[in-house]
Length: 377
Ligand code: XIL
Image (cartoon, rainbow, N blue to C red; front, side, top):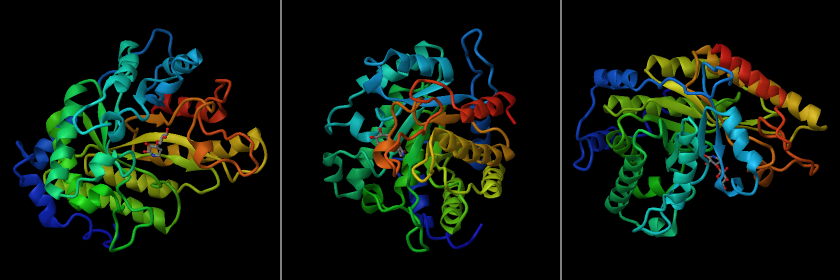
């Protein structure tokens, strides 16, 4: 652990304020009760349709409501391939809170019901994010008012889905894109308004609202080789330690795994990261797996070959510390993905980011995932 990032994240008094604050901490957890709670909330046994392959580690996918009715093969693919199905966008702040007064649960309800009524599991993404924030929220400039709104939001949403969403990305993308000693955290509405304190506040509200949900810190660029990635991993670990030191529960770190097929995964660093987290009582979960092949020359064969390497290396690093909670893809089919919108291929040919191609045929890297998740090693 470099001490470069160790001290500057959550100033001690802010964390302690959060752990002791009036609106927080009805039951402040000790480290021992934290471990007991983590053990008690071990994942429930998987339910799966008869005939489906048994996986030791669940596989999941994020689903988008807009394609449910227009393309029946879409939901069928999730039901066929996934143990966990979660709303991609419908539990984000702006989707749930178009206005300050109202909570719009209908779209998320539909997706969570689709999962659970088919014997699948589901999870929540996400409470605190820099993006998908409604204008009414961003016009709140007072720290106290922002905190009240954040806590009310988390309590109301987690109360509604209590016992149905097995884990939550409590905070998403809070680490600076290019971290520096002075600015390890991302400049967001929440940081500007509440300071780093918004992180412990969010975790504490979440654990109070649904003690059975696993609470995750989720971020990207945690898997590649290089100083920037080393710094991001160090900051994630430091955040975990500081939350625990303040008696605040956190159960795992989500590696989003938007994998650049032209970059090198640092297998050893990911393994070390997983081992360090395990020593703190936390697990890893892969939350948003897809492949960014914009710099890969050639056609589908070259794209899939490059994807197989990055996905294989990621799994090697992750499994080195033991099986992750789950491996979850950010979609299921190349037919629908954010990748070509945001990072299109330079030659204009189709991107191949997801486990199934545009005709719902599994890629070689999905076969690899199936093998690893079935073996659990
Ligand atoms: C993306 C969705 O895939 C898009 O449909 C949406 O328009 C924007 O958000 N990191 C995250 C996800 O944590 O929430 C983002 O999802 C992708 C990057």
